[in-house]
Length: 118
Image (cartoon, rainbow, N blue to C red; front, side, top):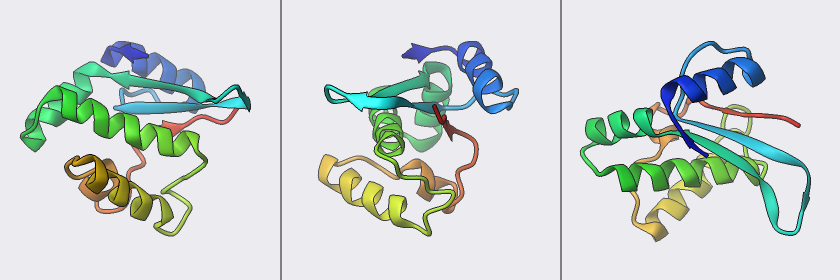
């Protein structure tokens, strides 16, 4: 889902109890089936600001956010995994020719976005 800051703020408040906008939220499927791991919500407004701050286009930032969110859907959690997700994300970003990801930008701690639990 591509949404606004207001839209993602509502989701963040409802599902994480955090009354603020964020860049990406991951909603893992309760029972992954038929190749569906879950859903992502991305604030295009936040993505556009981050893209400008990083000096690349919105399309690049959306890909960075999708990759990060998909890793959460695959079960990775950089807040608890001692760097495993950061290593995998860095390897995939290199293969996809994407710039620094969310974890590196935050110095390894990116608690602003989140993974929902079913």
